[in-house]
Length: 372
Image 1: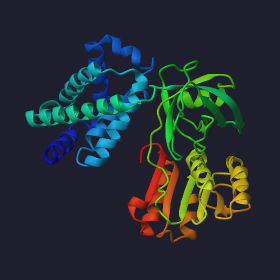
Image 2: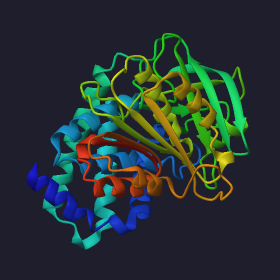
Image 3: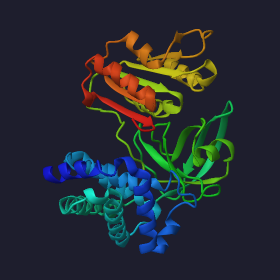
Image 4: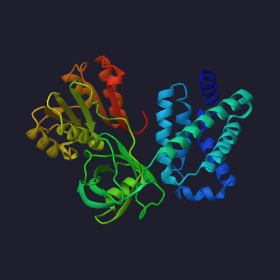
């Protein structure tokens, strides 16, 4: 795969700055080849529609890392069952992808690039189909909203119960959610904010900052108890290493608290020997919506500590500054397993701090809301 990976990267430079054109050509060609596929996508294609193409491109860029390539694609295949994608659709998508790449790249395209993308897509689609075929779960779960609590104007915490079938997840994972009553065929990923339980109840923390998508807006402002949502299969690798005996650092900002809360809840079920340090940041004290709940956990578990911080609230009785800077002041964290969740800028800044502490990359797991 080394030559294929090299050719993919070389050819990508021809289209990288023209992603909008590539996306437009891909979907135009896809729906021309098979008009019935249009019904699988949301009415408004901006943002949501691009996710299929982005997933294929991301997969192509991991071909030189066989382990990541395999697991990513099998998970992707399982996840795409929620769209009712069939085996024949993968063939059509491959034709549309090659047409879009050739058209966008122009005269710089050559037969070697063409064959590399054919080979890569054959591997991608094969592993996605294998992942989908091996999944014994339903394509998605119907879930009833049980509770819905607002925190300020832009944040909500809701609990839902998955119906019909058990939904098994690990603390730190995320699921994709659709609110079909409000925005059918539009899905968005949200971290599960509680540890697995026998009641099939999942908790989600949702915020709607400026520019937030339709699903987040619906989950915060429109969804109410009794509404039905759809949940896709759990994904993500920000999970606990139970074989490790190292102490744990968790860093969260905003609704990035969700997976960290789930990790702490899971640790509460068995941990007696590992110190767990949670750093929780926000702009103001009013944005620390989960602090009271964290302090309740601290009162019950002597191995847990929580350090809140505000970056724009000089009256806050606690640490001041960006949460990444606060974490740096309390280091070093070289001997810890580290978990980071929040906005892309926050995750980048925290990873720099941990890198400066020489924390090995394999001991750092992170979840971000936006591209790093």
